[in-house]
Amino acid sequence: MNALHSSLKRAQSDGLARIRDDFPILKLRVNGRPLVFLDNAASSQMPQPVIDRWVRYQTSQHANIHRAVHHLSEVATAEYEGARKKLAAFINAREEREVIFTSGTTDAINLVAHGYGRRFIGAGDEIVLTTLEHHSNIVPWQMVAEEKGATIRVVPVNDRGELIFEEYLRLLGPRTKLVGVGHVSNALGTVNPVREMIQAAHEKGVPVLVDGAQAVPHMKLDVQALDCDFYAFSGHKMFGPTGIGVLYGKAEWLEKMQPYKGGGDMILSVTFEKTTYNVPPHKFEAGTPPIAAAITLGAAADYLAGVGFDLIHAHETDLLDYATDQVNRLPDVRIIGTAEKKAAVLSFVVDGVHPHDVGTLLNEEGVAIRTGHHCAQPVMQRFGIPATSRASFAFYNTHAEVDALVAGIKRVQKVFR
Ligand SMILES: *Cc1c(COP(=O)(O)O)cnc(C)c1O
Image (cartoon, rainbow, N blue to C red; front, side):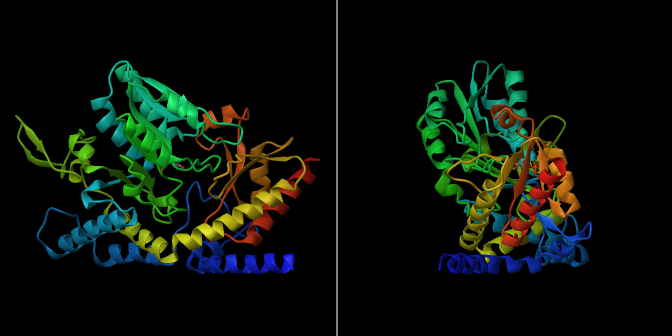
């Protein structure tokens, strides 16, 4: 009965994964085996409708935007601004001008570090970050702190990889000028209590930047419900192209912020005496933007909404539970990051085997995982390890692929015994 129930559940869950037929790259064979792509936290794959959108733009809609009256320029401008509208709806922004196209999460965070940080953070001020941050939500703030004489305070995590909320509350002080927190940890998969963190920060009048690179592919985002001041994410981690991302910012902040880059399109008028900046979002989009990538990102948002986050969440939860259970059964394998609330990331260490060797041997079986510090060295330091092996799932992954991962780990252990 139980076995029947679980095999039924598994079939149901993998029904969603039949959507994987939309993803041509998943049909590849690697080293003579079907590709098992479990590196989605680093970059996910594009479905055919999204690839088609790119091709359609390049074959029938391309011209530079915003600066001409000819047909193609008008089409490209409408499609580019249409993509902004789609992204605003996708994250439930109040206004389209709150969506700024950037080259990715890193670029979006740097925009805030420059536009908000260098303007509003001064000597003796404090920036609160967490142990779980990706380097791209650490280094830009260190640069600001160093330049301004500010200090970075770090929220610690417990042994499961969860932020210690009381410690966070203690760090919020009269000198705190910004909180920066990842929505989901890329190294451990921990889902952080960002809503509660934002509420606590706002009680002290402190704005919050959320690094959403790992959240957007997995859960429905509502920036108004979160009430975050800034939210950053990347196209290539949500089944879109590289070279494009989004910074959401509340209009009231964007209006006060200084532009990050100067150039064409971000100005209203230029003389050598005085330049008047354009309004948001254009103030932050100097030069020719990645037009094709932005339009294609709009298609990726449509695609994700079409699949539906309820289904995505149900299937990925099922996959992660299954993978966690299977890996826990292996002797001498330790899962790093066992938070109660986790997204589809499984980080682990195999006793006596360097993660690099784990990754290399798995690759021989066609299984793609990532090994290393995952651009989150403070997390590794917290757990006293140099690196982990990380399998990260998307909705197109299946239980059979988890089985391939587990079989691969067993083989690694045999080779190293
Ligand atoms: C990938 C990632 C980033 C950086 O994204 P880019 O696309 O490389 O700019 C930042 N934060 C987290 C949590 C990430 O996973």
